[in-house]
Image (cartoon, rainbow, N blue to C red; front, top):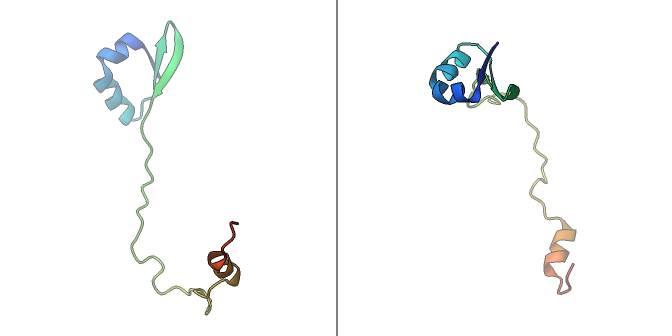
Length: 81
């Protein structure tokens, strides 16, 4: 773990980012107190695969698109809800 003051971080930001990407953790301090951390970004290496559910069993109700009578009544009524 590396510690640098904010002035050093300003002048050496590109190098510090490269070090962080290589696995080093950099703590940025101001007046000797930790203020920020520069570390590598951890991305999820798994990629989503198109058609991932292909061939898998699915359930869709026969009445999935049936009208709900309460909603029909609400839209057809003249009074506010």
